[in-house]
Length: 302
Ligand code: CP
Ligand code: NVA
Image (cartoon, rainbow, N blue to C red):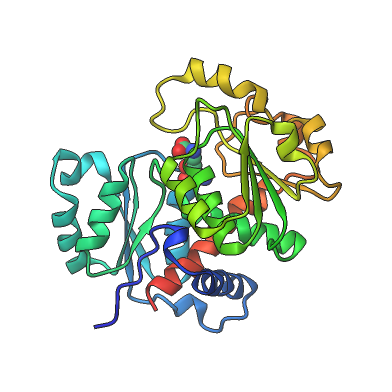
C-alpha cells in the first residue's frame, strides 16, 4: 500500500515536495489544470476545529467544493473527541467515512496521534506549535509579487509563536534568511531552534526589531495574544516595542512587502497605516490560503 501523504509540518517534507505542492496550487489558481473542478470528485474532507477560525475553515471548505469534493465540519467541543474519545479511535473511525482529515487543535500530540492511526491523509490546520498551511500561502504570495523567496531577508517582529515556528521551518526548506526580533520572555521553542541549527538554516534571533527590519524584503508580524494565551496584559507590555510601524517599514528595502496571517489588531502589532498601506499584501495572502490549500489537498489525495 502507498504511504499516506500527511501534511503535518513544513520541515517534515522536503523542498521538492513543498515546491510540487505550491506549483499544484498555482496551476489550479491560474486555470491551467484541466478538470480541476473534478480533481477531488467523490472525496470528503473532515474538518475538526477545537479553536475558532474564519480563513482556515472557509478556505478548506471552499477548496473542497471547487475541486469537486465535499467537507464535513466537526466542532471539537460537540464531538466525542471533546468528551475524551482518543485521537487514535477518532482517526480509525473517520478513516472509514472520509478521505482526509484537517484538524485545528491546541495540542500537537493530538495531530500526531491522528496521523499515526488514520489510514487517510491528515492536515495540520494550526496547533500551538505551528501553522504550516498559512506559511505555504505566504510563500505563494511573496513569490507572486516578487519572484523567488530564496536568498531574501524575511523579518519577523513579535511573539515566538506557532506562525513564527513555521516561518523558521520554511526558511530552511525555501532557502531564505529569517531575522526574528522577539522579546526574550517570548522565545521560539527550543526544538525549533535546535532543528534550524542542525539543518544549517540561515537565521538570527535578537530583541532588536530595527535591525531585523533593516534591508528586509518582507516584514511579518502576528497578534500579540494567540488563541489560548492567557497573559494578555503581560504580552501587550512585552510586545509593544516590536510593533511594525511606518518607521520600521522604511528601514526595509523600498520594495519590501508586509504580511500578517490575520486576524489583526490595528495599532497593536502593526499600525493601521502599514497594514492598510501600499506595501501590505494581506488580502492576497488571505486569498492564497484557498489556492495553497488546493495544492495541499490535491497532493495529499493524489
Ligand atoms: N490565519 C488564519 O489561520 O486565520 P483563521 O484563524 O481565521 O483560520
Ligand atoms: N498565532 C495565532 C495565529 C492565528 C491564525 C494564534 O495561534 O492564535
